[in-house]
Structure formats: C-alpha cells, structure tokens
Image (cartoon, rainbow, N blue to C red; front, side, top):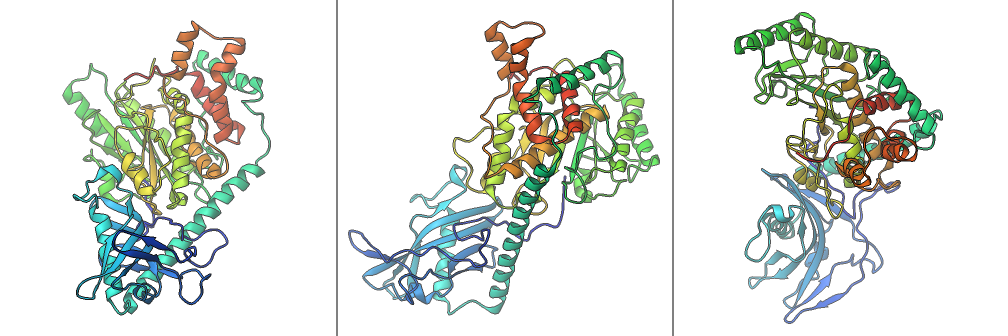
Length: 541
C-alpha cells in the first residue's frame, strides 16, 4: 500500500559494501596462495602493485540490469592466467529476472581455453535462490551461469564504456546514500527513545499495568468505548509525516445474514456515495478489487476507496496515511458510514495494516529483527489481534504465523521470497530493499471501532520501529508461538480469572512488549485496553 520514490534496482550488501566510517569500496586483501588440483593449479588474485595492498574493485552494470562487483583493472586477472594456471576471483553480484533479484557471491574460476581465450565458470558461487529454483545437472543455476558469463564478457573486453561507468557510479552513489540514510534513521530512533521522559514500566511496575487494565474494564462496564481514540499525536511520533513512518489500513466488512442480496447491493452503493459526499473518496463507485493499487497510491486525504472483495461484503482501502487529525477524523467517519448502512465486522473479516520500511534499506539484519521480534511476541500479538467485540479471533486461515527460519536470512530477497503470501501474518510481498518498501501486518481481525483500529496501527508501527532501533544491538525475545498461554493455563489446571503470581506470569510477555515498543504512557494504556478486551488464542485454525 505504501509507495514512494523507488530505487532503480535492488541492492545487497556484500563484504565490500559501504559501512559506517568507510568512503571507498574495497575488497579485503588476500595473500597469494596456490590451490592445488589434480590437473591444474589456481592462484587467488591480489593487486600486483603491492603484496599488502587491497584490490580496488568497482561495480559493472550490464544491459540486463545485472550487477557485478569485480576488480577495477581486469588486467590483474588476465596477467595471472596461463596455460597451466587458473585464477580464482571472488565476486559479489546480483541477477534480475522475472522472479525478482537474486544475489550471488563466491569464487569464479578463470581459465585459458584451447584457442587462447579466457573462459569463466562458477567455482563456489552461492545464489540466494536456494531450493526455490532448480540447477542444471552440475548443480549450477542460471543466475550463477549469468554472472560467470558477465565476468567473461568483462575480461574479454578492453574496458567499459563511458555509459557503463556512469551507470555504475550512479548505482554506487545510490547504494551509499540509501545505506547512510538507513543508519541515520536507526541512530535517530535510538536517540529519540533515549530522550523520552521516563514512564512507569509495565514490566517492572505491575500496578502501572493494572491501573490501565482496570480503567479499560470499567469503561467497558459503563458502556463506553473500551479502547481510547486519539486524534492528536496518536502514535507518539511513530507515524508522523516528518520523522515517522507512513502507514495504511484495509478495513473489511460484512452484512448481517438477514440482509437480502439486493439490500446488500443497495447498502454498498450508499456507503460509496456517502464516502464521496463526505469528501473522503474520489468517486461514488464500488470499485473493483485492487482499484487503489491500479490508480496509484497517494497521500491525498480524499483517496479512500470502497473495493469489491470476494471473501466479504467489501473492503475500504485507505490512502497513504500519517498521524494527523484529518487521518483520524476520516477513519472515524469511514467506520460510522459503514455501520450506519448496516455493515458489521463479522468473524470472516480481517484488518490489514501496512507500515512503510524505507529505512530498513537492503540491510537484512533489520528485516530479520522484525521477523524475530514478531515471533517473540507472537502469542501476545495474536491475542491483541482479536476484535474485542467478538468472543475469539477469526482464525489463522488468512494470517498463519510466519515460519521462523533455523538460521537468519542472508539477503532481503530471501526474506521476501519466503514471507510472501496473503495467507501469513507478516507479509513481505512489497519488500525489496527499495524506498517504496512496506510490510503488511495481516493478523488483525476486522473491526469498525476506530479505537481498536488505531491500536492495531500503533502496535504495527511500534514493532516496526523497535526492530530497526534494536537491530544489531538488542537480541529479540525468544519465540513464543501462538497458543502458548492457552496451553500453559491448561497444563497448570488454571480456570477462570487469575490473581497474584499467576496473573503476573500470564501478563508478563504482554507487559514486556508494551515497554519495548512504546515509550509513551498513552500508547501503553491504549494497548492495555485492547488486551483487557481480548482472549488468548488457542493456536488452532
């Protein structure tokens, strides 16, 4: 849903990528070594001007939008290859095809063929495509072969053209600028959290949590909205236009079974017309599925659209949003218009929250941190995802918890490949290492209560911001899969309301998450109210 000024291509850091405090791109020097083989020797390449000097490397961009990191002077390689000796060259590269961008790194072997021409073959290249694409009979995939061919083309040419050099420099400048911006955003997130006024910790001060919890239950008993709704600084800066993240929502709704088909059609037409008359929608139509995507996402406040959805009565898709009074006034009006015309949040409806992650850049550690943070609080998040107006979560058919990999992902393309589905809770379909990237939180139940939707947005923003802030410095919590608390209570024979130490233990993971993702009392109290109105998920479909 969130769009922006996209990058021309995807990038991926290798051992030679820009790092903090480094202005040049170099490969680490390797001593001259001979690798014996039964028939031929192979020499690793170093800069012949000095045994201790690193090889100066540069990017090569092909006409197919492949990207290759190779020694700046190909003569360094050519000079080491003889009839009796090959050269092993370490490369980092990426290949673009219809399935996306695949990142490759490792060695290629350069040999002299019978006709005297240099020939290049993959030696130990590894491709992030992994098991998702098949290799040839020798185990080499098409991406590795493409990079070997590109190296061969470079070694066989007298040099790159001025156009190639300009394109390569453009890529280098873009990579460096985006990486620097990502580091700056991470530093800013840490500084802002450190500068926030001290508030009572829910984890360390049980009374602080209990007060917010009891106040929410009292509002519920009095017939007042359970979850507070804020229109000024509702996110505590997390969704601010300046310095925060853009976000968006998709609100599914249904109609009561008692309504006939013609009544439903008429109700949808009224909703579309009233949204347009209120200045919220650009037209009075019930649009087709993904109409907003086809039209192009915008942050115009009148770009909310009612779209057809085959699984429910309809879905209202927001424009790109920021934490501003008009956003929250429009959201409240959207919910009111749908309810007034008979719309309900049935057990079939879901709510989706999109959160922009342009500052995650192509640094895979940021993406791993978000996946693992969500896994650490998975049971808590799926409890909070329940619509408080329902007696249970809608189920996992359209929001199955993500599979946590046994080892961290090594590239952004791998994150996207293995977490790309409309059936999982955290969808990385629109994550490629670009400025337009956004993650989609799909575990939320549908709701037509503005306070509930706002709390869902705040949790999504809080998790996303905390992951960037803590990546590389704070380990994520250990996984706590959905259904954990229900199983623990059953095993302990606990029934009914909990008190004392049992209550403290049962709420500990929630209190820890609230402290971790929110530095402001208002946001913690809002999510505590959502906790008060929901039940632990049983972990079943």
